Image 1 (cartoon, rainbow, N blue to C red):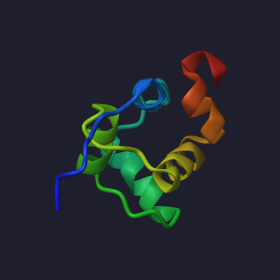
Image 2 (cartoon, one colour):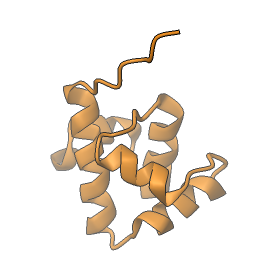
Image 3 (spheres, rainbow, N blue to C red):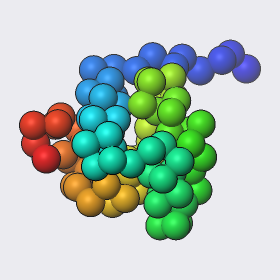
Length: 85
């Protein structure tokens, strides 16, 4: 089986930057945000979150929803960029 492409498109890149921006604006470390996602029922490590923010890992819908809930923003706000929050 061939390896799946990791290409991350512009919406994914924007979401990655927005997650990092909102997280740092709120004074949260990656471990803290990952712990919040885990507490919400979406197990996430700080390494996983770091890879999402660096656009080295795709952020699937479940990740996006958990991260948005943990940051107390709508999932759409993560897709629209930092000005939307």
